Length: 349
Image 1 (cartoon, rainbow, N blue to C red):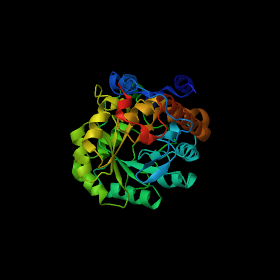
Image 2: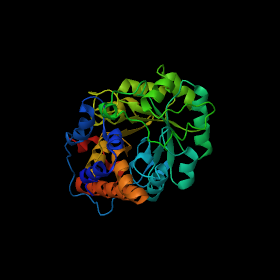
Image 3: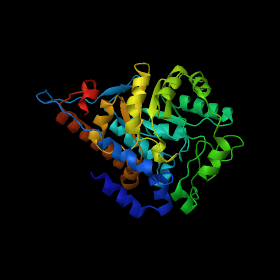
Image 4: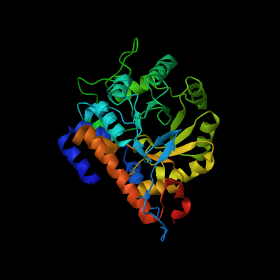
């Protein structure tokens, strides 16, 4: 599988506004590009003469056994790229044994995604809204529907300056809606992402919100959007069970540090008190190996899933995840490591 060609085919066949909404980043897209480039700056120092006749990629995330450390990051509006949207993504993720993180800004409801793949592990990403009752309502629905964690995005007090969206005047096409918000009494689910976020997301968010969410349900809280060790430590002390190192795919503040470069500091700050994951620019199995060597327990992938969903629906998503798993197993074998537990920072130089 060639991910560059996969994206190129999506660019040719999708409406330009839809393609650019997913592909684009903030301002000059420096961070967008650096997220991909940063992984290659870490050179691998492989072991030799190690028994890699059998490579085991399995691990656990918040107590759930998974077959590989590669999972799906939250991405809004899956029906922009495929008519079945998040339903098809859920089926593909479940077939591949990967965790699907469903966005608050999904075009399919929490319940319908769960029904599409009832046995697949899934987490729910959310923003804390100014209307805390709305946030609590979403959390309750996710818990009832069998989601296994809450992924709180904390890097979006406002929507970043996304130049491509401005060029197109991006709004949701007719027939699509914020499916998780539309049924809330009195909800105004704008077709404009910027308008909705500006009116709804709480820009006064502090670690108090992490503690509030941790006490709101039985679901563990994962804090997404952390790039500093001190912030990560504060999240854990407030009750987070895991931290996801992320810069929102380069879509918020342009020029921020690449996630690969932020990862080790966060891992060192959190120590063994919480799990650490990472997203941003992961494109090959060798990137997964690097992420684990820097201390991540797993990686999450966003844009490539959108392109695979567009081209092949649920089968496309499953094929992409299977390919990344195979690539990761190959990287492990060539680096002389037979399991996730064998990967350590001394593999990098």
